[in-house]
Image 1: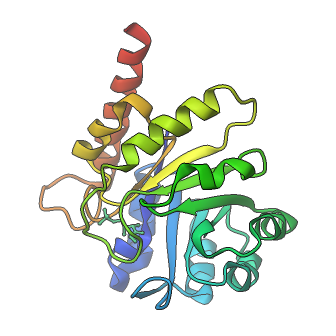
Image 2: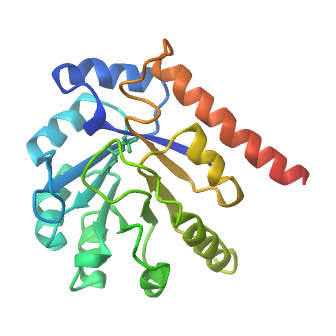
Length: 230
Ligand SMILES: O=C(CO)[C@@H](O)[C@H](O)COP(=O)(O)O
């Protein structure tokens, strides 16, 4: 199954209600909400009240990415919203299992986020405990960056590791995800694609959100079909 998530930080913040309606109509599977603390990343984004209002205004499941230091503090701050997923960064986690357990305690699916430079080996001890891995394909903090191709190797390694396992966490990719960069990942396709400014929002073409999402779904479907035929 392939899922499309929209990075809502990249949407029109002056018209967020309209953005949510358009994303629902487009069949968007998840709303990716970046929480930025100005410390772990040099930017600020999306507080708990804002995300809570968004959750109450849409049927699209919420996917929170904590781009913060001190994940436990922010897990406790954002868990009452009851998103579907919470991702926290392994690079700043003193107690990874504690974070996972705390997220599960709230009935939320735990996900570990990895920066492009972080080795995939870091996450291996936790693979049977988590529901998802968020592989950042840019350094978190800002939209509009370039895809880090070193992640392709990590996707390959991860898919080899998971092929022998019964429990397979989903793989989500985020950062400069578009037709071209999805093409680069076609040999080891992830499960969840976060679309931001490079494929969904602020585009110059005349396509609707539904058309942009449909084009990406079709591209991925074609790769999967060709894989079966090869
Ligand atoms: O988390 C991030 C950046 O930190 C992403 O969600 C991006 O905001 C996606 O947008 P583009 O890379 O497509 O501009």
